[in-house]
Image (cartoon, rainbow, N blue to C red; front, top):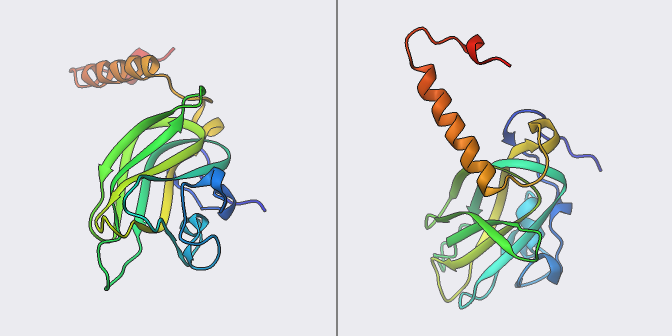
Length: 195
């Protein structure tokens, strides 16, 4: 099934339930692998939620997108409960594979006790992304995630493919900072910088 996606500009992608499967290769644990309470693929659907069940360990979910995307943002929405409260993800990480079986953390954050939380990060291209929940606000009960969203565009539309290596990122950041400073100088013209 073709899923419409952002092309050429950063925007919120349209989720596909195919990006995460309810099996061990795609998640650390789920309360159940079917239904509205448990499966990790529920984070990509319009109903249900991922229930990690246990709060005494770290949990993760792998998202394998249909193709490589350059992302700049990520949003997590907690499943709301009145009793017991506190099942929102607290300490979280977003990671990408390094190619040697390891994972690199792009951004870490502390989420609110309820609702949604959006994080931004430097552009990064990958097909695989991993959400890690290190703790929840209800430590003993685990975390319940209603939805996630990715902000970005197809890597081919962004003009590059493959992960942005840290040394490339540093050089790119230095160039952008230099260019922005120069652009503030009196008499600066963009055409002066054209190739």
